[in-house]
Length: 319
Ligand SMILES: Nc1nc2c(ncn2[C@@H]2O[C@H](COP(=O)(O)OP(=O)(O)OP(=O)(O)O)[C@@H](O)[C@H]2O)c(=O)[nH]1
Ligand SMILES: [Mg+2]
Image (cartoon, rainbow, N blue to C red; front, side, top):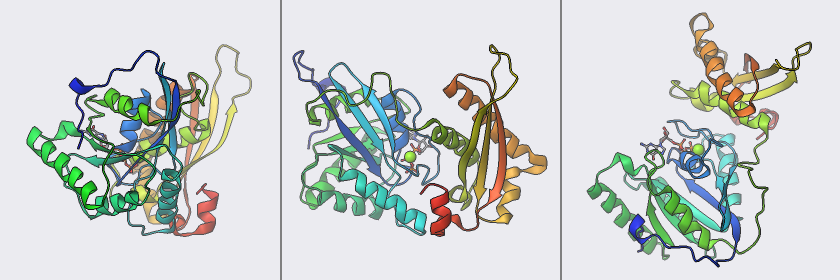
């Protein structure tokens, strides 16, 4: 086992060759993959929420360093699928980990290893050629003893399955602990080569998708049970408002918030439309920060009956 802490941080030799490559974060839903991706990139490229299955497609976040370009591929949480959407998401994760140079398996420090983690670890064990780093997330939530026990359990899990973790690294994305160290440990595992993305690019997400995600993130806040899974957002149109003076532009964005059943409409809209209005205000601020221009956000709620289970609806919603 090689648990790293700051004191054992490897120093990068000045003549080290430039490296560039891909590392994906996998793990159960809610393990902290997207929060860690954002912390490493230094900007929000993936939405996060205290709900499982927040991430629904792979999101690339790009870390630029003098010695390397590290492309992080944040993936949807791997889980037992209950819907066609769930199956599609799991397929996406498996395709991704077959294509990357390093796999980062995220396990929250504050939850004991469970069947879900074992299931993922078992699948990872069959990918022999790719180095696997175990990342213990959310270390700010536990004391030293709990963390130590978790590190030992993870080491043991690798041994049981017949492989050795390349590293076991405890991090806290929220507390900004050992996030830089994690990048230092991944970089030497990347192939030598020139940068793959232009300097300054932090993600390759299309603007329209990022906007839809920011709206979904705002819509997820405070909803419970099945509703988070039922929400999908699509940006239908983005147009600069006509007849505006050049120094006072306004961008009109029309978006639909989809739900699965008419009965969910009232919850999303809220009494007298208040909830939807709040979602609009909150996401508009973030969209304006992202685009650097004032925005008029027009949100409509629409029912797409049982879209998570319907192949045609899934296709329409981009899955
Ligand atoms: N205290 C603490 N909370 C964290 C940390 N990292 C993530 N969280 C919280 O854990 C929850 C889940 O985080 P996400 O980053 O959305 O988790 P995820 O693994 O991407 O989840 P899915 O996309 O659903 O698979 C959010 O409420 C985060 O704020 C951390 O380092 N410390
Ligand atoms: Mg996520």
